[in-house]
Length: 464
Ligand code: NBP
Image (cartoon, rainbow, N blue to C red):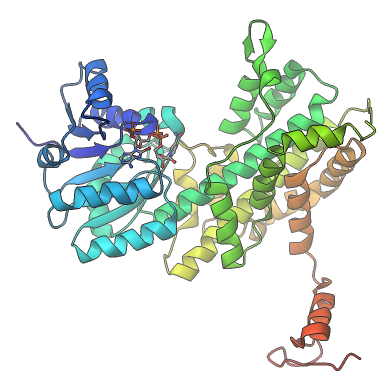
């Protein structure tokens, strides 16, 4: 039998969709899934369900799967991130040859990817940590793809990855060689971090409006925003969610208010803490999800709180401007984190190109992301763009209005307030950090720099 162009391990939600996408684009593909108790269930069902595809071959034997692929083999792992990736690589290794390429398409932690790349390089196997965004539908019709690894390995896989990826406005693939090993998964992790804060902002807007609006009213307000600056995939699906009914009642009204997470948000926050970058909105969004999980305590304590019944409606224009403001700060923080990781790991990442591959196929695609291609060209900060800076400055009073409205109505606005505090902090020349330094020196003799002396010198005061 003729050897296939590509191999894929893990026929879960994403693996199935990517396999069909690859086959639809004219490539032949071998697929494999682990089997329980000698059963060929997953592979058999997949092949039977897609029996019109003559370019897909299914395997339940790993050695036969590997032998069916053209060398150098390009094998994508689409398995659960964590131990499963290591275990699959271990089982795969004895069957591979020099210069074969393993592509990890799952949401693996970037430091695991760096470690795995190094180990596999010793065995002359290429390893590409490849972030894929777009969910099930994106994987099937065209995701945004973020491969990180050696340029040599990328050259082998580029024709397939770029063909199956979503296309931007200029019909260019939403897939680019991100940089060396680990960088692809780092960038995907921050994509998800930005996604966490974008979702939390929408949840906070919903919380502000649901007090005295119907689901349909909110959908109408958001639909209006969607025609302007704030158009995005997440806004679009929020509108669809607000309108979705089941047996004459809105599904959103029946969904338990406990937000779960899989890890990329907290990993982004951890990376921000490690790199010393104030990605406050991502962290606020992660913590807001954590607070939501304390449902029983929340319900218990809420019974002792006097409810405020405000009939005053929030100002829609101010809310729209505050939303635009907070979204820019969220993107600023996310890209700042990528920029610092790039310097720290010597990855030489191209921020504008990353924004470009996030304009289609992925979850955070938006009009702002399209504008970001230009904003980030030659700049690492949104604040360096005069128009953006003025927009942020002009929206400040709208943000404070919204925060005041939230406070007087007992609506927690974690990410909106983080955005505001970051903006004020980042544009304040003289901060109160002198007090922190004095306190540190008082109890710990940590020493401080002076603003009236050479800043390379450190001083200590005997405070008592
Ligand atoms: P699923 O849970 O649908 O599928 C997981 C796959 O991993 C199944 O094929 C499963 O085999 C296999 N697997 C597991 Br679990 N443990 C294994 C092991 N020890 N050895 C071999 N195979 C194993 O996940 P998914 O949603 O397709 O996600 C796959 C990856 O893609 C994850 O890293 C995820 O974070 C990432 N991702 C998901 C999305 C999304 O929207 N779902 C988007 C972007 C990225 P089995 O069938 O035998 O259990």
